[in-house]
Amino acid sequence: MSVLPWVVAAWLFGVGVYGIATSRNYIHLIGCLSVCQSATYVLLLGIGYDWGAGPPIFYDHPPGTPAVDPIVQALVLTDIVVGATVSALLLAMALQVHKREGTLDPQEIKPLKGQ
Image 1 (tube, rainbow, N blue to C red):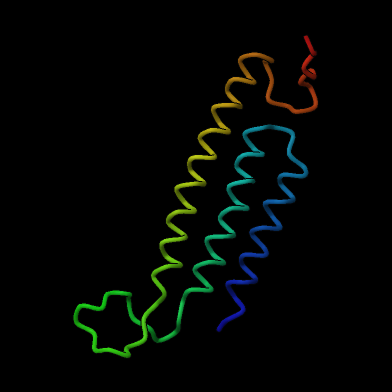
Image 2: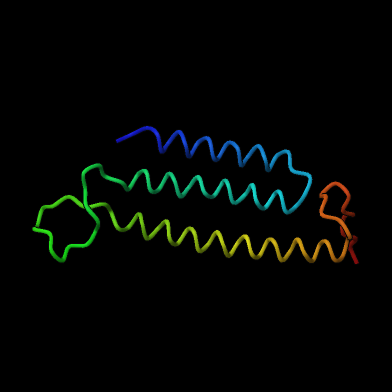
């Protein structure tokens, strides 16, 4: 097993967290959150990959042939769908904040007042 996917995932996550911490715009913040989530794709694919293994299609392979884990691939696909959905929801919320407040800077948005 290679350490490269772990290093790449840690680097992507670190860059995303730094972007989230220093962001002064909601659109930038959502993009940085997507970068953090891409670290999970790299990590899951790195964990599920097996050097020398074939694709997880067992139609014409004899029993005992090594294959890449298909469950990890399904988890990555699910993670991509969930990430796209969350990003779309957050972008729609940012659009509503911009319509209501006229800005996307979190420091300039007024706090909500109770009724």
